[in-house]
Image (cartoon, rainbow, N blue to C red; front, side):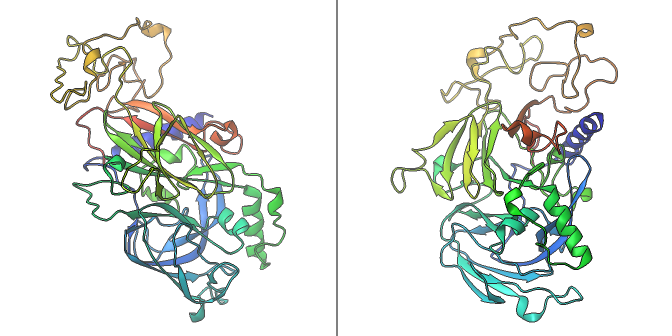
Length: 451
């Protein structure tokens, strides 16, 4: 338990230390429209420090660690209307393939005909794919949105082993600096976006496949998918506390994508959520409800061009296997009944509502609560136990007195809200809490850069 809590602390410090600069968070990935992927085997790290053999797609020529297998596979970012081309090679001891849910008109060439699509054949004895094992998939990205891709060959085994990834299709007219929308409509506009690809792993399957590969047996020997029993749960291929390390942490090369969102008050954060495994995951976000604006790459609108007028507000996303969700999260502190920036005597500031929306034009303070103190008296320090994220003050961006050796994990005096699976067993690493499908969103004070 103590080691796990230390890992949580180290993760947050590393993430915040590496997160300077930038004007707004964007999903990490590689841009197309042409991609060269190879199916490979390697090891991933669980949040408890253990390791598991996994299979994944590697980007041969781009990404933070070119040629290294990734779990999940590289996030493929393309534009609406692009003709997307993916070349797949295989170094695994059984055929593999890729299917593209939500994409129409997919064609494939090379390899051999599989049950669902063309398959890349088994590599030769030296681990080098034979020429005919290369498969080229082509499709037109005709609809913007959030999608997944995964193996269509023995999916019960190969997706479990890690052959899954995300595709993001940017809408026509998308501009990172001036026009950040998920679907080309103002109702899908955002300031920051983050990916949450949710998966799980049954360690027994991975151990059995590792044994089979070591002894030269077919990988599926002894694997009974009907006895599926996961003990690890992941966001973007990481189990907490590793979810809170920064992207591209060099000690997590096969798991390069972090999962700790950050934002300022009043900003719109786009959550791109994917059910990438075979279990339903109730993904719960503390701090506020979200508005789900799209499902499976389609805007929730009553008519074309109406925008997300059928959006759904909820405090938990019920993430169904194979489905994708786009949701908008906002936080302002409205309704708390006290000034989130502290009293004027403690922290001199004003609240100027120039556009009549009830909030300060810059800091997004809720002006009706301006200069209202916290409505309770905090206990004396000797009566408190201090968490590492306590800044010494209940106010955003304000530090207070702390005993020696306390705090230190909140260098910007932000507000932390936990985001996690609402299934209790899924916020553990092989029954050890805390861990699993868990991360934090940090509400940062205005002026703190978010990459």
